[in-house]
Image (cartoon, rainbow, N blue to C red; front, side, top):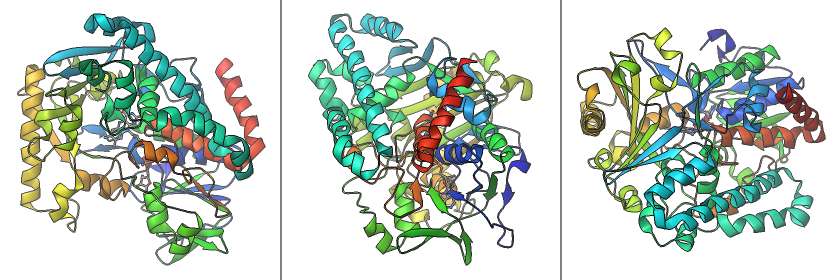
Length: 533
Ligand SMILES: Cc1cc2nc3c(=O)[nH]c(=O)nc-3n(C[C@H](O)[C@H](O)[C@H](O)COP(=O)(O)OP(=O)(O)OC[C@H]3O[C@@H](n4cnc5c(N)ncnc54)[C@H](O)[C@@H]3O)c2cc1C
């Protein structure tokens, strides 16, 4: 990423006159910051990592390979989609997307392959070829996805209502959505078919929301599956282009970005925000937007009194699942290796719930792997990195497996830890070579990340990759809204809405709307006008 878009934090810099401080530079933070900067507010983003972007950042190693950390595909990016309209608004149309083609996902369950094809009708036709007796159930499934998501849009829109309006009208939206959000994915699917194999195939992409069918809310399933129904898209140039192109616009409107800026406190007085603190340094501002996850915000940045004042109580909602990822660099091009654009969801058997529940460090890759081919998706890769390719292969992770290394430092965790990573790599490569034997002998770079890496770079304490787990209970938490009870304190990020770049972006949009109120409609008009050009 271009360095001039951000600078390292130093306590002696001039931070005076800020309207808004955004903590954390993930997609939600980038969105709200750019939105506010575009209407003339003085905004600064403070990010603890040494590069901005949160899960949209990429990392590079000496041998020249670059890998994304948290974006494999984004849905709903066709030319005329509203989501693309919002991205165009944020990036002044400079971020381009490449379609992954007709097939965006392939599930391999117990050795049988199932293709996920772009477009509702194609999806349906394809599934009927696998389950000819289940046409009615497949139809019902698709209409349930649509119905749930319609109610979901109203549910998320309600999050910007003022408390009095929420009490008098908003409850209707919540109640209507609860019909779906309060049931697990399995419960809803089991009502439309008793074909367990069909249910499992329909849930094969559940890694996108991080919970198995018997634990996840159907609302999360419907939103994420619906998001990809028209196909998958990849940001041309790599995931970090999302952040880079947004920051170009943000900084052009006077926004400032500080890296290595680990915010330690949100300072309040009489239930009003005063500013933030980084170590001993106090930085004043009119309002603070926290985009670091609700766990981090309430448990680490606010006082106990503030936390209670905001009625923060997670009930039984746990952090989402963690992961282990193998990053590979290959010395042949994606074309020469015939690597696909689609992602592969591999399950050893159709007991998806038990695969996730019973995962161990030793058996994880053998039972489940999600494999993605960024260089094959990116039309610019070959020009910039001729004769090379990249692959990312993910399996389930658990912070408890790494408890013994928690107090160690990044890159200095010792030989035993390195050996664990080596073992994971060996097991994952076995899976990869089984599906793609042509890559054997071409791997020239590899790296493994664990939940400790996720914690180190993003501050999610259990190494969770999707914030709060997407259980039915998550959808009942009253404080998952942009506006908090503390005057001037707002929340953005995946916890406020849903997992995903689109979910986080939507949270930023809601947050900006909650701050700007009616003034934001002017911007919506601008987005619409830009879209119609
Ligand atoms: C392995 C993986 C694969 C994924 N694949 C996809 C995909 O294919 N498609 C998709 O749409 N989504 C995907 N996601 C999810 C998506 O990336 C996230 O949901 C989304 O990017 C989260 O954005 P966010 O705004 O909530 O912020 P985050 O990206 O979570 O960023 C939070 C930021 O806050 C910073 N921070 C934390 N504490 C502090 C502090 N005290 N001071 C300053 N800064 C702080 C962190 O360093 C971080 O940069 C994936 C995620 C992962 C991990």
